[in-house]
Every structure is written in structure tokens, then in C-alpha cells.
Length: 80
Length: 267
Image 1 (cartoon, chains in turn blue, orange):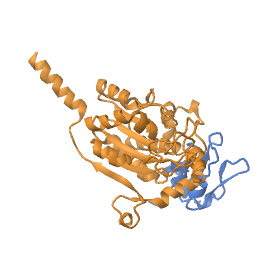
Image 2: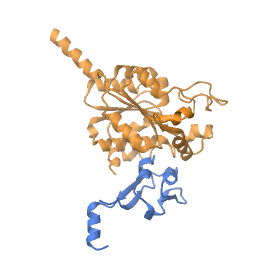
Image 3: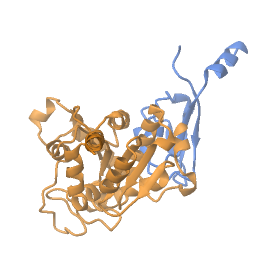
Image 4: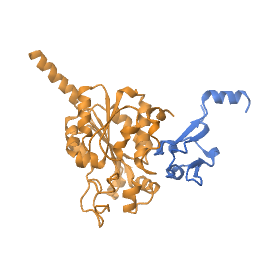
């Protein structure tokens, strides 16, 4: 079993209040605030799927999705 | 995310200020409940009044939003009538230890099976930033414009002295530890107290130049240490976090059942 692989950051912009907790404490500096002071994943390729942003978010606005076992299997089979 | 299955999404976004630690406590609590795999029907949230107590409106369990300081009293009633339910009592520092101080210490003394969560932001946020019994000496508040001359409680020591059988402390920065502590507190049979240091950037932060929510969480990161760490001997200002007490004592509802049986056999 390898490391979990990031699929996507699902961000609920209606709930995000732009406090910046996730941006500041991200160990890989993946997230940033946009011009509306809402969070977005600026460098998703650096994400290590620690989920600390999701766990610390006071607004329950971030969800970090990982690639599931079956999706991974399909990827390998299709030779990607 | 399973956490979303446990909330009443129609009330979101919630009323808490940007960066409020109470949101992180909610998040962590739901993560713990999801981890334990508890059924929604087996959980009751009983809260009083205050920013922190609004939590019971947001969770999709049985919820009871009661009067100021009396959350533990109402929770005692629920537990006595339905001992099979898991009762979680989220409270603020003022709700738990000023207005509800007596209920709190006596529930701890009885060792009734409740999980009391004290979200300690050291201020009355909802009413405009008055100092609370947890503010502590030297802190500024709306009602202490120069500085506060009252000393604060130590919730952990107070709970241990009052007889709580599970006492722990963590912060909103240490979410993984916090989730683990919540799991243990919910599973514990008896009165469990979890103190969570939770930032109030709006009132406590502004009045005391503590900076933004991020700065206040950095403070928790740099000024708390695991319980029993040697760093505490060198710097007594550091705040210990972890589990302070975890012991087994007869639980109140079970003892009460025994008395009922004795009385019935006599009659």
C-alpha cells in the first residue's frame, strides 16, 4: 500500500469565511486566499493528504478527497 | 466527508466569527463521533447559553438548548431518565464555571456519565467581551478596561478536585490530539471533562492585542506542552495538555438503579 494520493480539494466557498487558518498551517503551502478572501488550492500537486486543513477548518468548508483503491487500480490498468 | 452527515446544513454557514475556535471544536467533535461510529439516535447534545452553546443547533442529533449555566443540570435529568444515551454537554467557560459552577462541580462529584466539554476562550463573546472566571489576572476586557484583577480557575485541577473521573485538556491547534481525547472522553464511563483552549479573535484577541485567529493558534502551539514534559520545570507559564486523570469509579445512574432494586425488594 502506497501513500494516499490526493484527488481534489472540495471547497465550499459559501461557508468559507477566509480566516486563513488552513492557509497558514498547511505544511506544504498548498492553499491560498483569492481576491474574495476565500480559500483555493493554489498548488494541489504539493498536497500530501495530511487533511489538517479539513480537520482545523472552523467552518467545515474544506474536504480533501483521496484517490480510492478502485480508481487507483483503474489508473494502473489503463497504463497512466 | 462523513462529518457533513452529522450537521444540519440548513443552518450553515454558522454564526461564529471568522477564525473562531468553536468551529474547530465542532469539527473535531464530529470527527470523533464519526470515528467511534456512533448512531445519531444515541447521542444527545445539551447546551446552555453563549457562543459555544450554539453548537447544539448545528448538530443533527437529539439536542437540547437550555438556560444559562444549567446545561449540566438538564443533562443530568436526561441521563437519569435515559441512561442508555450518550450525553455530550458543550459549554463555554462562563457557562460552565461562573453561572453553572455549582452544577459542574456536583456533577463531577456524583460521577454521572456525561461528557462535559468546556470551550475556554477566556471571555464572554456573545454579550460583548466581558471578562469571565477564566480570563485571568492582567487580561483586558470590556468590563476590565485597565486590566482584570481576578485570578482564573485551572479547569483541569478544579475538575480533578471535584471528583471527575476523566479530565483532559487540548487546544484548537492540536486537532488530532483533541479528536483522540474526545473519543476517549465519550467512551469513558463516568463524568468526563475536556477543556479546549479555543480562540476568540473578535473580543479576547482584539482587547489583548493577541492578533488574528492564526496568531492565537500559534500561541497555543508555542505555549502548550504535553503533560509531564520537563519544559514545564523551566518555564511554569507553559500550559500542559493531555489526559490528567482517567480512573474507574462507580457511576451514578448504575448506583441509583441498585438503590431502586433494594427498595423494590423490601416493598
